Image 1: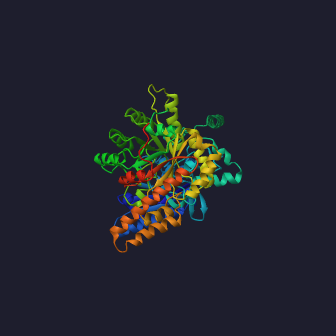
Image 2: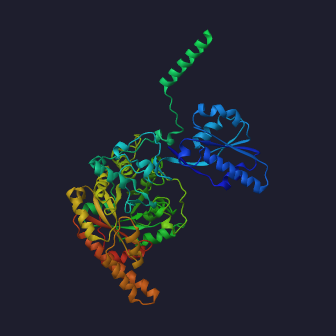
Image 3: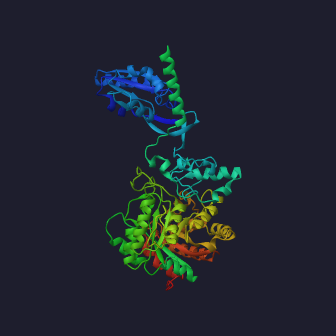
Length: 238
Length: 323
């Protein structure tokens, strides 16, 4: 899932203070799981903004709302007219949601209420950990299921650097060395010999380095178009 | 000869090689490089010119290497994977070769958060590159040299002929993987290896036995890293905090003793510890060179380049072979 974390209220206040009618708009999937931007958190942020506004003597209307997902039109379309009545939408969805909604709110600006951090998992209640970098060319079958792109601070592909200290990364004793984990895991799996092969320089064009990415699944698009045409024809006969 | 560098020639001659290290300044003043080059010239076969070591901005390795080269010191330019993508790397390699540089040591580089272990501000917020890793960089240098091709496949009319080096930390975690790590660098094309600083010579002997069993000591020239200790405090720090470095208690005790012998006289304590450090260094050099499979030593006198002359002479490694 996409993991996010709340922005400091001071930063949020500086974003919203000059608007009269603000909607704090939550997203109830990924960012709700990580307690950053679900409807519940949107409600809290709205309350904090109202409190700040009253302290600063500003006249503001601040409401909150939440939908299941900001990244699919079907979820926010039922409320989009309501959303457009505000001067500002403070979206507490991830960056995807903020961008996606921005394209669809006409003249109403959409500001980010949280910081989108990474693709991660729930390691323990309240602990989230980055595990994938979305590089577009997965190689973890060669590294014991552990991703060196996301989990090695240097994205090393051929083994650890000299900075591994007691299984931890040189950047912090709180960060596991990905290559320490890879070697440990592959030893357990009996596949360590796979690591003897040199992985050549990667083609990073599948990652963000290749420019913004888009995947278009033609068979799905064709199917949807046919279905839409059928509905139209059926409607015409009626 | 792959490169014709002095380092390559000394190793080919069968003599133990000596490399040293020159840290460029955090300043645009070339005189410090000139001064250090003068201190090292004649007492080593080549000197590593560090590439923004500890993730701190300094005169670039290539520029400082070119200055050192003008002074008659053979440089080993260093290139980290931290700061350049493969385009910049290859451009710099062509440029470095055009300036006459013949040795290149490939490194991952300290992470930008390191900032001289927090002693300087550094640039912890910098973006790192790591487009390629050390193994891949070694392969790129080899492809450029031996196939006259850029990594992308475009031809190179005049190929850069580098003697290719890489580093190796034999005693860091995951320790059982370290020989494979070395093997990969050697298979990628590393002609010489400089190890992380070693104080635990028993450990080195054990690891070199594994390396000899793999036959790697025949495929590459392994130079044992020796970091000249300056104080008991430094040895304790290296032992507790530097990855892959363990310092035997006996060495720390010796330095402590040297320090204590000075009583409250801080200046004397410094002098006595430095003298003991040099003694320890000379012993380490001898032990390293007696280790089968070790072809030379890489002596790092960090910010103490003036110590190299005395060390090399006292270790019986002077004069350096004329090749």
